[in-house]
Length: 309
Length: 275
Image (cartoon, rainbow over all chains, first blue to last red):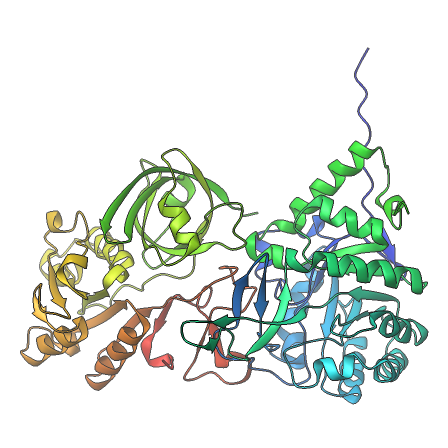
């Protein structure tokens, strides 16, 4: 009798009416705008390409040193280096449009008005599948102050929602004592999904020279070290809001991704793992498929929120 | 799609205190790496990031590449302690290459310490790759001048296989224990001053510690001598996405104020860099 093999698990997910080939996406700031990653990851096997934050005007970012490896993770203070929305639309968007994956454009502003302008500008061009609002950058003057205030988040998401038809994801900061309130503020004002979490504020010091190891003194902590924090945030947010949650934080393997889905995420983003291995999202998607098959789960969406408590 | 590849250690030779020359078997890198490029090696599973090392030598037929490194921390210590046959996960070759000199100019290779590694490979490439049709004219371009510096004679690491093809290094040491007494940049200044190196017929290629690269860029600017420098940075990704390994550009503004050493370099026109 021929041996029967179970069909490959279905990795497709649907968020805000958009389908994604897999729930494994790149995280903003860790895959550029697609040019570099194209050589390492087959875009058809990548759930989505989430771009590095784009601002209204070009930004130079902070001086070197911008990164330091820490126990189980890394700190960064890149400072949102990007070429600005107009050059982005001219130079980067055509390639993203060609790539057979979803393009999620991450935008960052210094004021609500800037977020609105960015959203409006991207609403009028082809090739954008979704927007992700970076309301949580720890490395710029008001990134966290604004993004950790639920009133400000409400206003910002409300105004951006009115400016665009595009599906809207809101990336929230963990540098608050109440990330759930931020997620609720976003959900109540028309966000289609919550991305959680951004990096945690951290610092490293060289005890020989007494100097900080980052040019901006503090930076954002990412990598496996923050996975437990991220899992708890995803779990709490998923219970509090009706819209999907996109989990981010130290995902290095397929089972890491599975844990985020079990906690309630509908998809995940892979960031720091890409710095170690440029093919990480593809490998993680492969591992997730093997995990699902081993568990006898035919569709990845069946895993979402399966926490046994 | 490109991907990382396992590279198996063939041997390790300690060439100075804390400095190691290692040969790995990995045919793809062996075939494709050019002088100036680097490999990004993951020392072991407990390290989050790779270590970027210049390619020191390649043998396309044998399928091997060499690196030269100094133990500076946990990652490089782990590399130096690998056993024969053990593999590391290798990305590469990454980054750009040393451009060949314009016609009529001779390459002057200026290396500080382990910065000699990519220059050694470049010397070999120049010797092998430039056309040999008009030997008299091209002899100049094929035979680079090699100036090497070390803090002290006991730390001087001689590039292997170069003397066999007629390329001999002139040495400088900070304490005068080997060759010229002073820095290798001072040695270059000395050779320009006494007419052994003619700025209008030369192009400089440098690799070494950043203060040395800054001094070299300065000296070359004074003499209107074209100068390419290979720079070093702590590099999380190595392929251009993390934006961590940046250097300030003299000419760029806005987004281009900072260039990525891993992808826009590691070889830069020194006139474009703010040290």
